[in-house]
Length: 411
Image 1 (cartoon, rainbow, N blue to C red):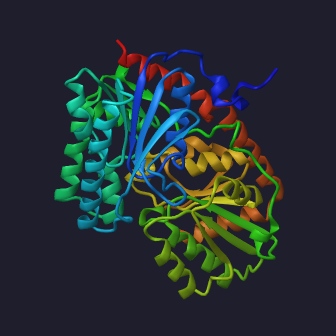
Image 2: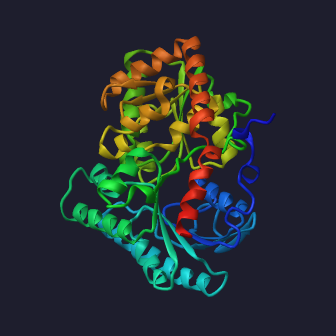
């Protein structure tokens, strides 16, 4: 019998569960289908019988302003480059609101929709959705990031803008008919801070689609002639702790004298160029490869080649309460992990990870080396991670809650 967790999304969804429904998904921070979670949601809703339209920004490899993929209608719009200060963020958000509003009304008078499904950040899309509620449309808030904590993690302070973000979050929850939370910590925030009724909050984790996210043949070129490789996948931003990882690499290479380890980092973001410059200043260029954003096949190749994968996210309220997609992706490929001690990171990975002391790059380095020098431990931890994803966290297991959230909007 075929394991249900390995079935495709299309064969895992109850037929016609959402027949006749029309859905508009709005996402600002990534293009679709590059945003894997949003694309999985869209494919699930389409497979359940819904007509699905998406509004998102353009991005590298996704420049078309409109295209239909797998029967899903994708409307893209331009956005300013990655913001790094308050003025640039304001410019980005105003441009996004303009395009989202314009395209939403275009879709409303075209294909139509009965539900707007808003994916943050930022917590501003309720402004686009609110007028349509006057026409009886429902609003689902898909809570990807806790923005007050994200602001604090990025800028190291609270103040006026932090208070503004708290207000916008409350208004978003107040506007929402239903909230989708990515984990139990976010569910509690929706209830306690957002005032949502417990029955209106559904946990839908960002689990990998096991029919697509699989190990592929290794590519030894990524190891740069070295025995071991450590992999990282994720955003290159200030709060992701890549500077701490580079400090760990410096300790491994120049203090421990380990010249047999290559580090391969996949992902783009506002800090990418600064991190490359930091790597050069530490004389680590030969040991650290920055690949930038890559297609999925290249991403799978890097993860399959890695002996250990890392998550150097700093310990702070944002990262403590958030489930990082990369952790579940590492586990799906069967790779042991090193990360700092954070609540949701430990909940996801359990014994498939080692946990370094809070924001301590030296301890992080020692954990990496310890794993690389213990092949049996790596294999056992990798097996634990794969089993946890298969049994608890795959996308196929999130489908019932996603459909339940939508069915709740029909009541």
